[in-house]
Amino acid sequence: MAAAEGAPATGAAVRTMLIDDRFTAVAAKFFAMFRYRRQGGGALAVYLNGEPVLDIWGGWADEHRRWRADSMVLAYSTGKGVAATVLHRLIERGVLDLDAPVADHWPEFAVRGKAEFTVRTVLNHRAGLQGIRGLVAPDELLDHDTVAAALAAAAPDPMRLRASGYHALTFGTLVAEIAERATGRGFTDLVRTELAEPLGEDDFWFGVPRHHRHRLARLSPRLGVARIPFDTLIGPFASVQRVRSARSAVYDGWADMTLGARPYDAMMPGWNGVFTARALAKMYGAIANDGLVGHRRLLRPDTTRLLAQMPPNSRYDYVLGGPPHFALGYHRAIVGTRLTRQAFGHFGIGGSGAIATPSLGLSVAFVTNHLGNHLMSLGDARLPVLAAMSERAARSAREVGTPDLLDAPVAS
Image 1 (cartoon, rainbow, N blue to C red):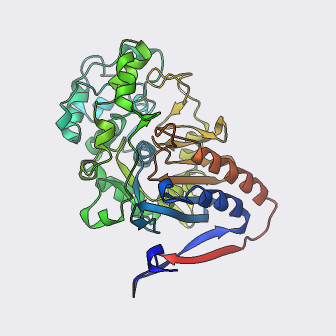
Image 2: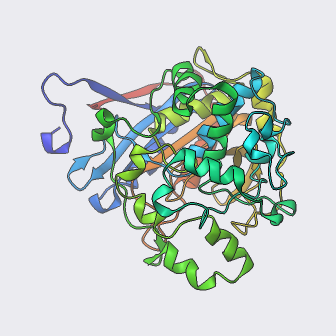
Image 3: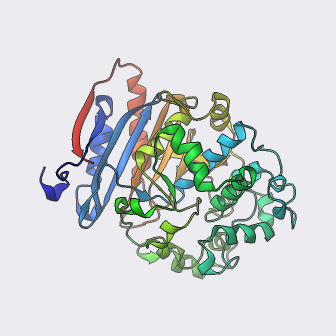
């Protein structure tokens, strides 16, 4: 492999791609997505019955760098599922109670009709606190303490009584503040002790340390539909109730801000999480396998069964205008062309995401720096397609014995 194609420098470690021979079709589909530099790059990881069966990457981290084994990328709302998992670790140990008021730990929250709102209320996007536009000044949007204080003082949207309302930018702040109040510890420290250390994977970042930033893949293009910027697109329809709710959940300029460096200094677990595919797949691999991945236990079986069996709390969402079926911090997943109750996790704007399918013991995680497709950068079908192919492979794997693994040494 030539140096221009990402060969390791002298003395550099070599990491090996992992391809279970029952998942070669999935791997081939993934590699076909990143044939050309303009398609950017990405990574795909899959776990089956608590063991890795795919760990692959390809394409370009930016116009001058290949995507490498340790490349990572901001994955937008994918981080909501990660933040929720931290909370479930605390819940199963009794540090938090799903049905106890948030105000038990966060007294300032108990104003303007929110005294009885529970942890479950927040995890189910039923707190009515999705509105961020005008709540804080634009230059305060990345300050956790300022946003948390504003949310505690805010009045909930009455629409919460009718349906869930997707907390696009505020969910992570609410979850992090609840966890911090209950434990007396910072949320990034909790992510380390509740996820990274139990799983043996470091790459769950809400705020990226400077010595890791050389690993970041650069996001592109600008978020929009048919090349119309997202903020511009929804602005003219602000008087329409459903669009007004969606518009209240984002700030003008937020989408462009996420393409720069500022989010890497902040801790906004609803949208600024930076991950590798292997870290996400390992977390959801545990969730799909009764809480166990390899020899590591992340959650108890009763917790993972609760997550898998929890019915959706709302038939539609008044912010999204659709049926994502939120439940306890995750949502039902799109696999292929269908929204299924058999799989859940969290997708992010632009196409990254991760899901668990407990009935198959399967997890699939996909991260990319190329947002969407040429028509719409808000999202696309890459993860749903890869998830559907992985499901077919997992079903076929039930009839196959010990797998053969294809080891492909590449630059780390």
